[in-house]
Length: 424
Ligand code: GTP
Image (cartoon, rainbow, N blue to C red; front, side, top):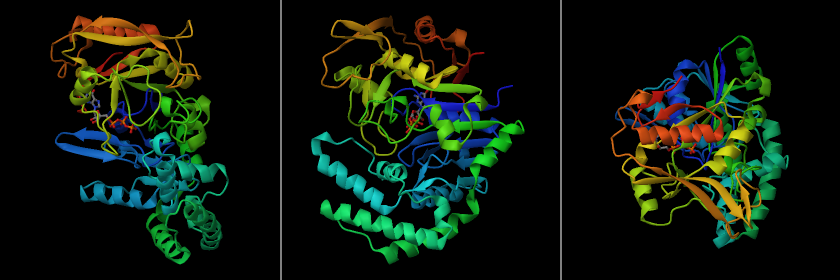
């Protein structure tokens, strides 16, 4: 029986991973976040209740097991405590939440640098959420980072903070921004450390032991392939690896221990922020999809760019993640459209690409090759059996799985936990 599951985004994020994780989490002994920070915005709808989680694994809402913030995540402790407090106020027991001692901490100077840099880049800005994620990963790679475990050793924390503040205050001065005071920050973080110290563990051994014992582990991805630091639309990407490979680097669990890799794919495409987006609809149809799908950022409230499903990206996502399943979401949003298009190739300088070329740029001239499908008008939001879906809807789904060579094993037809069609 499959024990370890990964859920990743196959497009630009906001595919509805939060809902799918919420659906799968009750069956898991562990729900683990492996990358990113509070730049994620997972939305979980339970009856009349809506939860938007940025840093906590979204599995925490429905999970009966343990929830882990893994080594590859960057943690803004203040945001973590706020999210925890909010959930505790709503009656959730968070005694099952743990943080890997290796996870890096986002400090206020990371946020200040993120904002200053985006401001300085002007029109060329990356479009970050300005929550300090990139600068924190920057420090991690530059080997200056301060990890959760460092907070628990006062002297080590003091040395690292002194060094970092000197460097960051220099940078902020160059940007003409306010600097930070050592004593204030040191004292503040020592107090914060007390609030989380009982949750800090070595998650590598916890997780590997759990897998060894046959427990079920769900790895929860944030963002998505096209925002991956290596394989996304660089430089308009996030600073981590939201692909299945990120599970191994971000939790210390080896690749052979992963059984199933579920790629969440929205039935159309959306993107927040800058960067190339071949199937973008800049017309009324794009606006219609935005309104019907309520495509506004869960973290920033920014309107998302909307467009057709892109199976050139889909092929790329299938390869890079080694997908075993596709979870197709928000197909209900397409109900009522006369025609639905899907990108199956890009033509660049006379050459046709069916998987995403690294050289693609916004500025580059390329033509998107589409396949067109007839739409359907029936309300599909209460359907539970695949065979009851309108024929045109099934044709659309079956084209996706045949084109990608991966089964669409779950079709989501609404935001609620129960609005799912399972296919064996
Ligand atoms: P990131 O990790 O930030 O990329 O977020 P995400 O992938 O979890 O997506 P997010 O929660 O931001 O957006 C998905 C939105 O669509 C949420 O409001 C969900 O409640 C909603 N949603 C999820 N699945 C469906 C679906 O099948 N149909 C409809 N209509 N809405 C859905």
